[in-house]
Amino acid sequence: MRVNNVYDIDNKTFLIRLQKPDSKAVLLLESGIRIHSTEFEWPKNLMPSGFAMKCRKHLKSRRLVVIRQLGVDRIVDIQFGSDEAAYHLIVELYDRGNIVLTDHEFTILNLLRVRTAEVEDVKFAVRERYPIENARPPEPLVSVERLTELLSSGPKGEQVKKILNPHLSYGATLIEHCLIEAGFSGSVKLDDQFNIVQDAPKVLEALRKAEEYMEKTESFCGKGYIIQKCEKKPSLAPDKQAEDLLTYEEFHPFLFAQHSKSAHVEFASFDRAVDEFYSKMESQKMDVKALQQEKQALKKLDNVKKDHEQRLEALHMEQEVDKLKGELVEMNLPLVERALQVVQSALANQVDWTEIGLIVKEAQAAGDPVACAIKELKLQTNHIAMLLKYYDHKRHAARKEQKTVEAAEKAFKSAEKKTKQTLKEVQTVVTIQKARKVYW
Image 1 (cartoon, helix red, strand yellow):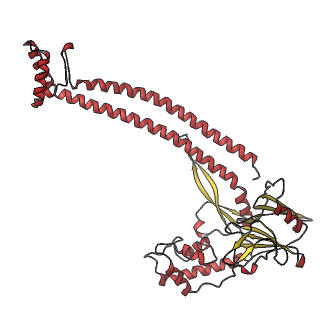
Image 2 (tube, one colour):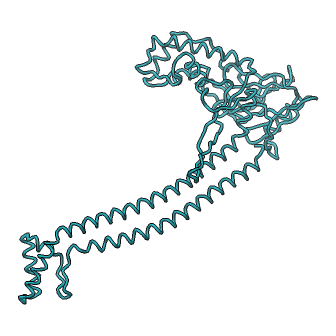
C-alpha cells in the first residue's frame, strides 16, 4: 500500500492514510503510546504541523515496505520506499516517546523531540544519525545461577515479578501469567514461604514459558482482549438494583491467567482490540466522570439524612436526661416538702426575709440536705426555686424535636429533589457530549 496523505490529530498523534487500487487503510501513530490501524474517524487539525508537512513531503506516494521492531526495545521502524529512495519513521514507545523521520542511511530529517541520550552519548537532532544498532538485542534465556542471583538481590517481601521485570524483556504481565502457570501465585513474594534455592528452578520453568510466548509474537496473528473494570452505578430508588458500569482497563494479545475470571471482550485481532480501546477511551472517561458526580450527589443526600438523624437523636437524648432529672426530683419529694415547711414556719414566726436567706445559707454551709435542696428564695412572689424546673425543659425539648422533625423532613425532601435533578443533568450532559463525539 502507498501513502496517500499524512495528518496530525494533536502534537504527538498522527494518521497515515494508505491505499491501493482495491483497498484503503489508516495507520495511527502516537508518540510513546501506540501504533495500530484504525477504523474510526479521528478529528484532524485544520492546519498540519511542521512535522506532518515534512512527512507529506518525503512519504507521499511511497510504498509501505516493512514494519519491524528494533531488537527487543519498544522502538518500531516503519520503512517507506526501497534502497536509496527509502525513508523511515521510527516510533519510540517508551518514556516520553518520540517519532523520528530519517532517510535511507538513518540520518534524521525531522523529529518531534530533540534529546540527548547521556548514557550512550548520542544526540537525537536533525542531521544526526539515528543509532538503530544501540537497540537492545534479544537475549538468551537466563541461567538458573543468574536467576538465583537476581532473586537473592531482591528486598525481603518484594514481589518476584517486580524483582525480575527490570532485568528481563517479557514485561510484568507475562511474567505474572507464567508464574501462575508454573504453580505460583501471580503476586508471590520473597518471604518465608518462598525458598530461593528450591523455587528458582520452578521460576526458570515459568520464564521458559515466557520465551515461548515471545516467539509466538514474532509472527503473531491471534486474537486481542480488552480487560474490563466493573463499577456499580448508584440509584435513588431502593427497590431498583444497581446497574453495572463496565469500562476498559487494559488490553493484551493473550487472555492471561490473572485475567481469566475478569470481565473481558474478545476481538478477532490484537490490532482491533487496541483500536477499540483507544477509540472508546474518551467516552468512557465521561462515563466515569458522570459516575463520580452521581456518587457525590448521593453522598451529599446521605450526609443530609445522617445530620437529620443525629439532631433528632441529640434532642431525644436531651429529653431522656431531663426526664431522668425530673424523676429524681419526684423521688426526693419528701425533702422538697420539708423545705417548704421550714420556710413557711419561719414566715409564720415573722422572721425577716433577709434573715431567712442567711439561715438557709448557713444551713447549706453546714451541709443540711433540706437547705441544699433550695436553689433560690423568691419570697416576694411566694416562690422557692428548686429542681422542679426540669419538666418544663423536657416539654420544651419535645416541642423542639417536633419542629426539628418537620424542618428536617422539608430539608431532606428538598435535598432529595435537588439530587434527582443533579443526576438527571449529569446524564443529559453525558448524552450530549457522546452525541457530539460519536466517532471519537
